[in-house]
Length: 147
Image 1 (cartoon, one colour):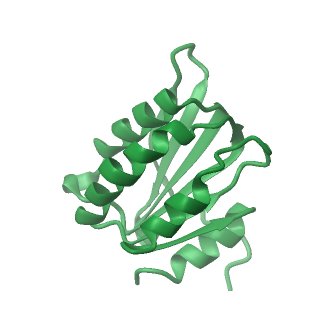
Image 2 (cartoon, rainbow, N blue to C red; image 1 turned 90 degrees about the horizontal axis):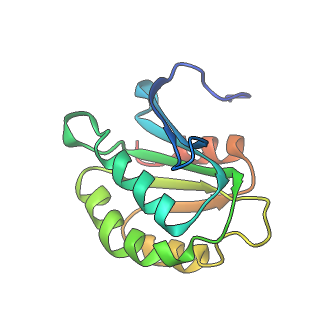
């Protein structure tokens, strides 16, 4: 069993926000066909949509990775207003382009997005999806999905 996280990643992008602070890091692990997005700072709905839209352009050959780890452990903010876009625009397109499993690492911020459970419940119709409190648990679960 893997006791630590893998290190053989390709940094696709370190995306700054409008003020130059780090908003998100996009690392691709080709051996695992996994994209790990690490979110930073206080997230707003507009920032989440912008970063996610940028990520769509990072797809090699127009395909989504089979697995996505969305890590909000270093972020705060309620961006639930972005969830309809995520649910009805981004998610169907990502699944259509190959995404099969997604793991969320939740923020420790108690005001973080309260709409995760509804998003997860809806997304379960299309893919394997789960929420976690730590990245290691999320990584292990994710690697068991979408072989």
